[in-house]
Image 1 (tube, helix red, strand yellow):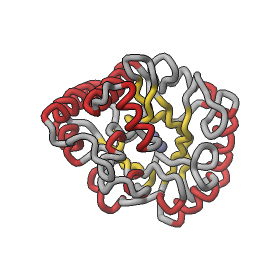
Image 2 (image 1 turned 45 degrees about the vertical axis):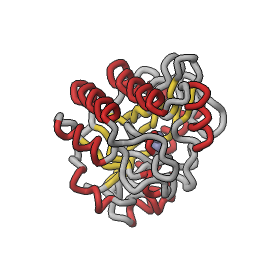
Image 3 (image 1 turned 60 degrees about the horizontal axis):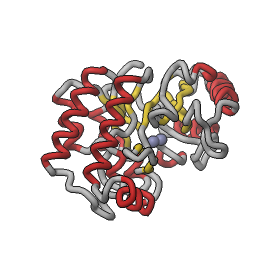
Image 4 (image 1 turned 120 degrees about the horizontal axis):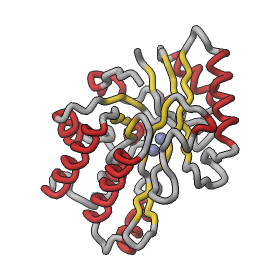
Length: 263
Ligand SMILES: [Zn+2]
Ligand SMILES: [Zn+2]
């Protein structure tokens, strides 16, 4: 059954409402759509993320939409929850206020040894400045710290799907800053895949970097996917759509990878 468990709406940084997204999903022949608004509970920034106050309202709105569209499409209420050690965690207990159908655990910001947080997914300027100021000018240190943080999330938090495990590649096509075939990077992917295989959750194959024109491959990369696959990790195909037209971006290309895993 076609669908995506990863998409964003006007409840966070998406362009379209949940109603518009769901109608577009029906028009594309989806059998289900799962919304996954950004959140950083228990810490919350005002504005485009779900806060403790906003999360239950969001859940009620998604569930009401699901009731209205019953028989046409299955609507699921999820959350894309950030993992920042000591600040925010993707955890069923933390999100109990919205009783999510599923939680995607994602790392967007990596914590440096000096305690500073550097986003790998915001702007190229922030990433490059962050590497210079907080990772001794070493992209390798940032990438290794990112993957260590991802492994820590997989081992310590209670969530359902591993979000875009190498989203730090976002700027690596337009402004290459590390060699994806380097031996140290292959080792870091293997070490991470070992933990993801052991902890047993599906990993998303996320086409959001393609729809937004950053890269021409999914997160994780083809190489990372083959390392994960070799260890028996299951995949779930998602679009990370921030607008209705991106809901099924590149799905034909990656359809064979979608193992239709049951949550
Ligand atoms: Zn994300
Ligand atoms: Zn997302």
